Length: 171
Image 1: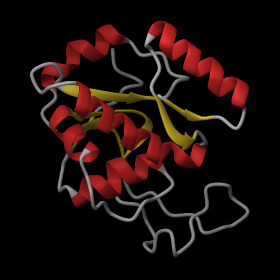
Image 2: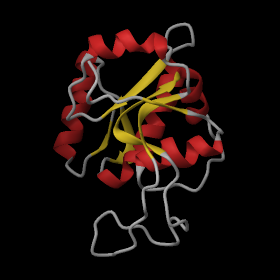
Image 3: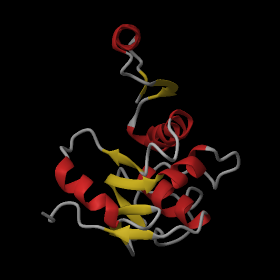
């Protein structure tokens, strides 16, 4: 999944790649770090539209700079029983320092700590949860940090639980 580039040549190359191999989903948004929330919402909506519950049990969101151990992940899927599966982060304090690139204003998020959320580099949501996320018409106020928004704010709004999994140190 990718958004639009400011480079028209790149957009044309992506369009050609899509028509030749049908392996790219390109949506109408500028692809940037602070649009990852929108990108992930679009991905869940796409999954909900193109698959069924009988085809998919979980949808994996994975950063493109990670290489998963598929054998390990697939062997563990039968043990998952919560709507969110991830390395859980709790008690993260909100930075208000404008010198910090990831600072947050009070207008963006009023609380002093983020809700419990998933490490955004890799998390899974049940297919039912992906359908709910992808079909929202009225969603909680948009937030620029994708992991905090989808796996924290939105998850709390949906009253969904997290299954804490150590992706990085398990065998």
